[in-house]
Image 1 (cartoon, helix red, strand yellow):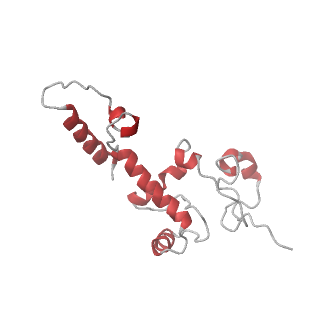
Image 2 (cartoon, rainbow, N blue to C red):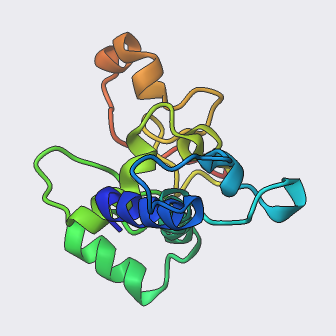
Image 3 (cartoon, helix red, strand yellow):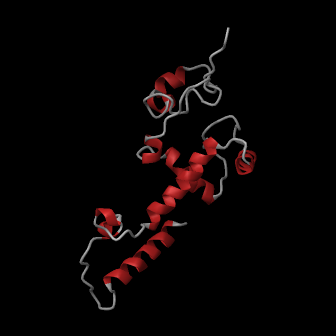
Length: 164
């Protein structure tokens, strides 16, 4: 849902609650208080922007969990993603639909809670990009150590441990 639509609906809900019949209604309770659960003293009204972001984040989460699902295969084929990766990659020059850009947005915003709290477990390394994925304590080795990345001879590759 576009942000403007969510804001419009949120404003209509609060106008209804606050009684926007006069020129300047008195706001007896803050919007943030309205959106709190009833157990915490709020009215339990959902903030549509937050709810929308949560649902979009769920699609991003499912992308990593459902590698054999039809919708994932369609996305991988449409945007030419590596089907072995757990998370999608944003590449320059790639045209993506506005909906898919919104779904992927948290992965590329440095301060976003989703990307801050998402870490990949190394495992066998077949699904993790060495330079790009957040498999260490830093967001990605490429962004955290750009000078070392610039000197690296192999900039693309999986972190695979060979069995001998």
